[in-house]
Image (cartoon, rainbow, N blue to C red; front, side, top):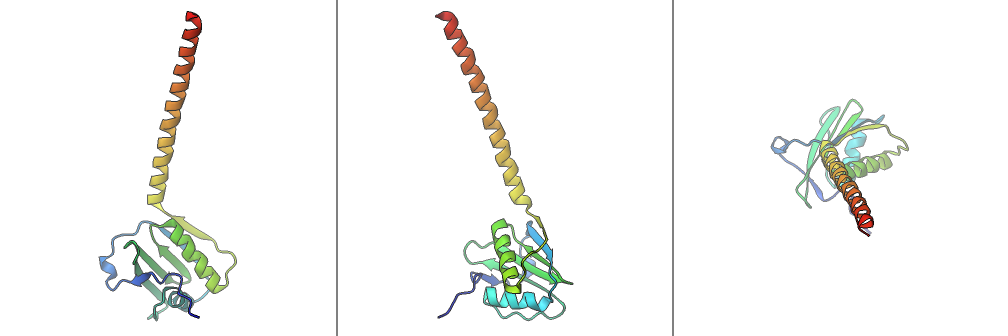
Length: 149
């Protein structure tokens, strides 16, 4: 009865220098050693990773959409870099479950998602302005029709 690792659709990148910049990230302090993060990577990504020192950095590519993901840990600080906010949340949640952590403070930055959100807000504002203009025009035309009757 074999259970596939949750993130087995991500494979390590052999040349991390060729990976484009990843804008989004989540950073948090983990009161466990880097080796615990390595154990989690091995269990959740179906890889055999041995950190060479007290820090680690590994980059993955998705077999689904060719997006990139980077996990770095140094001095009890872990940074997960990805432009997919949902994936970042799933990774943090999975790591916390693996390490037995119930609460975790983190700092997240997803500039691309914020730009997309700002564009949606801008469009909603435009639609609301159009709606208000149409409502005012409709009211004005209603008043004109009453005068004509």
